[in-house]
Each structure stands twice: as C-alpha cells, then as structure tokens.
Length: 171
Image (tube, rainbow, N blue to C red; front, side, top):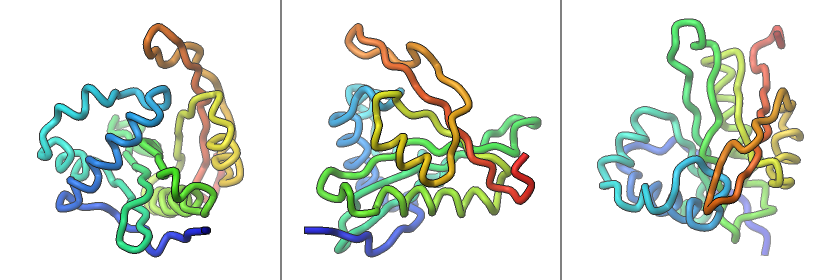
C-alpha cells in the first residue's frame, strides 16, 4: 500500500513524547547514521526532548495522525556563520518509505531555510545511497567527504558533506 503524508508541520515541545519515540527508533534502526546513540538518548528525560524541540526546528510528517518521519533545521549561531544552517536528524519510518515522505520533509526544511539563511548543509553516511539520491534530487551537491566521521562498535563510517544554496544568488 502506498502512503502519502497527510501533513508536515513543525513539532512543538508538546510533541516531545512523539519525537522521543521516533528518534529512539531511528537511533536503534540505523545506529551508523547518527552521531548520537540509542543508549545515550534513551536515558534522557522527556524534558531533554522538549528542549531539543525548542532549540531546533524539527518537522514531523504524519499519516493518519501517526508520526512517520522527522527532519531538523538548526541555524548555525556563530557571528560569521549565521548565514548557514544544518539539516539534521532525518528519518522516515520503514512503512512510509518510498511514499514521498522523505522528499516532502526535505522540501519543508528547504522552504524553511530559504526564509532564514543562505545555505543549508548536511552530512550523510556515504553508503546510504537512497539518502544520497534524495538529497541530490532536492538540489544538494557534494562539497566534501569526512573519512572515518563516525565510529560504531569498532567500525568506521565515512560521511558525504552536501550543501544547497537557498538564496537567490546561489553563491
């Protein structure tokens, strides 16, 4: 059965329990894809997830009222880097895969970024071909690679660094 996201919206601190559940699922299902770990975040109180939804803009995708995907937007806060932001924490539940939810989340973050910054950056595990295709289709281009960016259980994972200029100049 093909699903379509009924709604994509910014999550609020009142969504912390929903966000915690999908975040922990993401960390458990794909530990190699995130800098954090399931073990670290499962110990965090709900207030920690509420704060995360306060300090970053996190979009949630919903189908029939159930959260099926998330993607975060965080503006860099240095005085000379405020023109940039990061797309982070992207995850779509398996049952919603290949439904367009991922693209709709990325598009929501891009539209959000276009009103706030000039450049959107992300990093993605080099072996995650589906994510690389998704980001390239959305207009992101590779600008570098970080070798051995993440280490999990003694195994290293490289990350592809990608960017998208969201302002009119493209520079």
